Length: 262
Length: 226
Image (tube, rainbow over all chains, first blue to last red; front, side, top):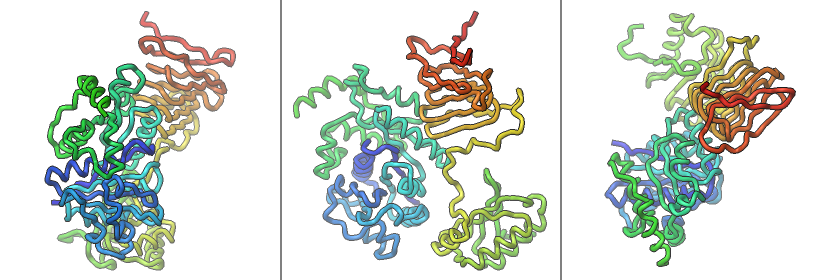
């Protein structure tokens, strides 16, 4: 009994945390699990947009914490998957409206309701990040194959270790195999060489992800999308299944063709 | 002391003791705590104590009274962890911590040793990640990498069994005989005494290298197997 609480963090902004949360949540829920995502970015909410649920928000996470509504009332049911819920962030408040113990209380209440709780951490290492990791059973670091993103990820891993949150696992997002081949981008090995934590997924760069985010349709729902496949594989690995990593190298020619088709 | 179920559970943390209260009334738990302290005086003497009070609600006078009682017995109360927002607020008012694990990027900074003789060295058996700063008034040995954004500042020498991609400063107190050596220092910033150097880009295999001061300028010496 009891859900597993996962927080996705990166340190740097713009690496794709919100998109990853939406896609992992969708992938887990499409597999029949009950999933709740929490937008931890109070004041700058986005997860509702990426999941296509922005016009359904009535109550938000701060309303629950401050007792203006019951937890169930703030859980917005997804329009496609019946067991996927979003608890949105408040847009008119800021990070100080929530404390780490509020998050722990909220997640403990959620544990009885769902199988997975996925928290979208805001960028940075301040209050919002601290709130987001407070309740986490495990943390996933998301980074891009870029020097600045990897450095911030390293910093966040160090903080998690100092907080005794355990060593997180890693997702490398937006890897472009063609650029890696031409030595214009860090390879997955370069990133792992520095961060030295367990890799649980590599998501190839894919224009479809941006289109999906803008339309509120996470690509994990698209059976043809390679990025979507990568997110589905990560979801399976989270459940403890062994899934081989996608062969991005072999995909390069096919992948360029797919890109060219658009 | 032979209660069937303990009213209070005490365990050691990295930086002090944690006492967890059971659901019993506060008066009983407090009595049990005081009894424990009286029975094991030397164990508690000078200890930093964190208290996990569960959902119990405390107001300022109760908590400050407890703190006084503890400090009379040589126990320093520094944190009260609670699920109750009222208690949290009370703790904050009294300047007590409300969470036990706190971010400590500078955890390695220990009190500086009085004399940093030849034998004094700080041992770091792990990789230093970005944002970590290690300062020591002696030699520092790192078995692991020094990642970009991490800093090692030593008054003595610095030896890194690993890759250095951050900042390493040896002889920070002005010791011109200090040196830095590591397995791969090609992406580091090296400082010895008051001088700084950025090693040239590596071509080919990484080689162990030593950096030292000569006439106020940093010199390097590659390690040779013969």
